[in-house]
Length: 294
Image (cartoon, rainbow, N blue to C red; front, side, top):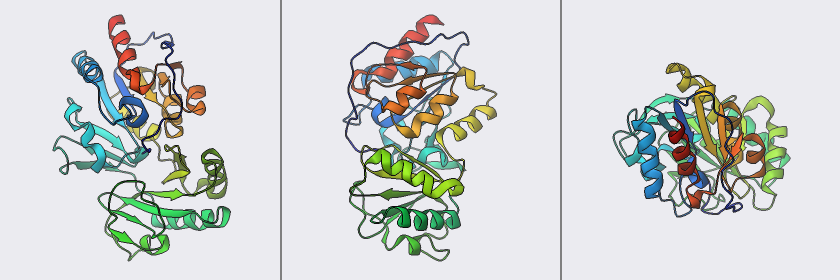
């Protein structure tokens, strides 16, 4: 998830890495990558995705968004209809359309680990406030800001929200969100990873100091790897796109990867190639050129 704000801008043409192995799967982030800043999918991008599917290349949307926010691309889930949501915490079948999605795979954050992460981060970064993302519910602390344009199901301290008998106790926790009002976003990420250690996986996709905390080993890359293994697809046959730190592992894992023209510096360093910005249809530009070479 990220707020509707760009990180940087660029208009350079794509740098295309050598591609000796024909691609079998495209894995693309949504916000800041496939979607334009107004959260739309351009006609050019729609056509490129359809052409890839017609050529026999599967397209996976791999996002930090929760399943309930996937209506923006629900009309473009050709074939399998699956998406990886919550930074790898869930694989979701979107065929039913908005409000009728089904969870195919859930990689939850154990409540014990979540509580440890909250306590460790409270000590390391006083003033941090939290929200809890579950399969269907969304809960937050009273001081957590209105970042997500939705009404939480319950307001309470994180320790109560994550208790075994707390609100939504019957649902798995997919991730917790940690927000700090004044720390630099990259510094907050570094501090949090040091504080939490191996109790959870910490990343970010927002330009603000908003962290996303998932189960140990849960990431876009690890869940994408599971989905590919089920299909007999190797990482060399995957082309990935992204723009923010939560995409770094996926871009490093994929055989070919592209940082958007508006990408975070860590993403540019991780990717094997670059394309133009999301508002300039950077994903479509690469797909079109890729299909011409097949």
